[in-house]
Length: 56
Length: 247
Image (cartoon, rainbow over the protein chains, first blue to last red):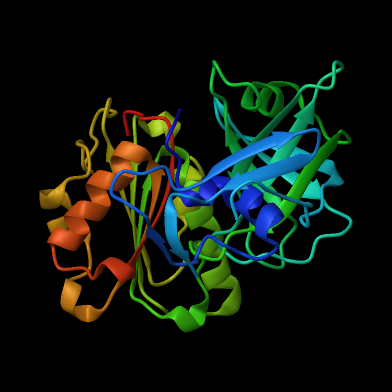
């Protein structure tokens, strides 16, 4: 797995959340956790945000 | 929200390639005619999607090189082991179609009202969004002072070199060449570090606004040095791409 800047998945975030997310503040759930997991299958994207305690 | 399936709201569209111009041996600027482009802000990016005959898709994000109000352009560096960039730099021609979506990004953007002075720090192709900011500054008549510190491996790797040689009033361009310097080179010849930043960067008490873009290692080293030098973290905006280069 390659760690990427939030900007690098800005398009995916915008697609999923429907609003600009690259400047959205967030709080991680625990140190070193994976923040978000996206899985896209047949044009449907499943999102796991369990790594976030808050997303503004 | 775990496991929620959501519909996409960002639209892919087909653009026409208007022109392809060589910037360096491995870098091309691709100007696009995008029929339904809502306009962009300086520093934003867009996504490109290529689909092969088998239906396999590859997406990549590219910073927009042009200023708001100019035709949409991206500047792409060929990565020899890349899936997308070799096609864009070597095979794409004017008149070809290209699928894209955008503009994207609300963090790494600049408007004249954001003030300055501006400190722009680029490693390699990280110069692309900073070029958009510079052109936007010029087109809007902004007088915000700018210092651009641009790290490249060699002089031949400097993107937009001619453009930067004719920098606008109020813009200082400082190059550092990390791998090879031509005979008589009077500029910097080392990687950007705290000592170099101490010589080039605006003093921290002047509330400068810094934009740092480049390979991850470059961005992390530079942004950390700026913060240690007194820049407030919220005045240091960063954008990085995964590969660690020698810039």
